[in-house]
Image (tube, rainbow, N blue to C red):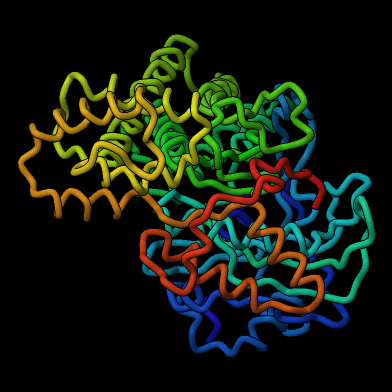
Length: 474
């Protein structure tokens, strides 16, 4: 028995979606299967070829009601009336040990929301999304993940001719801020309420049925969003396209496009070469998160008064700052909280910015400063002075140095997904070599471990590859 069932979203009124089939490939090819996720979802007994056939459409599950969702959103600050699933569909749900999980197919062909697109994804983009989902999951950042990549010999045109591919993606939900905006701006407040009630009913771990359930729903979304972005900042992650249609109501990172893990610490880093104004620069992500929550609040204005919206939005900064401060304290090896911590954290970031230090490696090697006056990165006069203050602060911590180092290594990754690594995997895969992908996946899913055979993955990127900007096209 295949435990994939129809998605509850299909029971909503027809204005919410379009029921449809999808376009599989004539000659599908299994590129990558996520064995760990497959087991987590209770699918380990389903043969990978059978699973491929199900996702490609050559083996049907009669009860399913696959659908493309209708939504709109603010893209680079401008409202776009209709977006929707233009190349994907909500395939079904699985009742897993972690609760209900969506199965979504990306690159499944045209839908009513495709506009002028072909509804396909390309191998390059689905590999990047697969890799980042696994990297983020290993870093304990809430994220969508991919179960399978299906390749093909079908050609599509982007900047050049590329092979089409399909991604079987999982997430706790695919409901976005833009789903609410769609009904608000189409003057259908009754459907805003229907959608809010659906979310409250279907995601009880996140939302309660209290007397002020809509206010509490919004408050939860604001908190989850703020905490997610604090995790992004602490790990040096840039999303690249923080449009409201790319924002999950459950605070999961998804819709990976031109993302990037920052290498040299440059707060103004922009990973998306289409973001000419730097709207979604690394340093702007916290503010954009608040801006997007404000846009969601406006879409909920038929349910929540402006006064209550403002009160809830004011909590965003507190959630964000508290979470980020907690993460940075842990990265510096502090168990307790002291007044000078904020100054120490900012002092380190200032040194990293002025000396263009590698963000990940500086934090990973910071434990050296517990016993030495210099580290592999921090060796300037200003840095040596900072280390002295840092050591004095650590004298207030009771744990042994060995325990502190162990705790620091458990939160400061040795390995991150640098864009040049993903590019090398893509180039190999485009030549039908998937072994590079398997090796990189092994590394990024064990980011805190010492992996002797993969030590070179911890090196700084070559100069040509630092802080690459990536295209939106996929």
